[in-house]
Length: 262
Image (tube, rainbow, N blue to C red; front, side, top):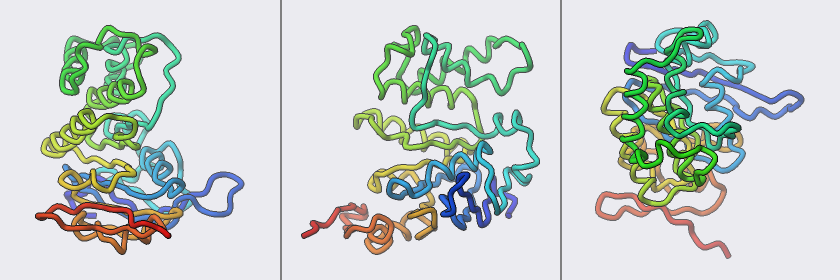
């Protein structure tokens, strides 16, 4: 791996207990500081499983992962939590935390045992809420939020964590266009600040102008990987999704269209 690589993955293979067919099969990738990688693929492609392997929650049966020059398996759990943040596709909230209290939990990896949040921790939580336009919700209960609002608050918690690598599982799902635009703008700002981002999505049109790299997955395997403009093609997307897809160039912007199937 090069000195600029924050994340390096080689030949990962993973199967759930009792399953013979790998969910992740021979996946390799590299990600530099400040780079954004989008992972596209149909349901069951292994995208979410790959994120949890990168986070260290699931352990691959074979392959290697290096995080900032160190093997992930050699990094203590609390150290990984300070470097890598996760925005899950959905998260169950069992207690009636306020939005601000929930976002403040993003600071937990930086606190010692029984240590209380400081004023700086409070400030970072409020800044994360402000960045996502959520200040009006700060005193609301998490249990009162809509699905889209809750998704935005989960992202705010990850921003408060100040991770150097952010993993986002379908962050655009269930959001209206304004909030999708807000999240894409946040991803761009994180990249400009040197944070590496990996996000999964079902929306090929959303990766342009945001993702430097694109990884296409089908049945746990990599169909294509590389610079977004080189991978976002009719042939590669059709092979990934198993249906005819056409990519049209309109004034330098690639529009993705599903061809009619007779």
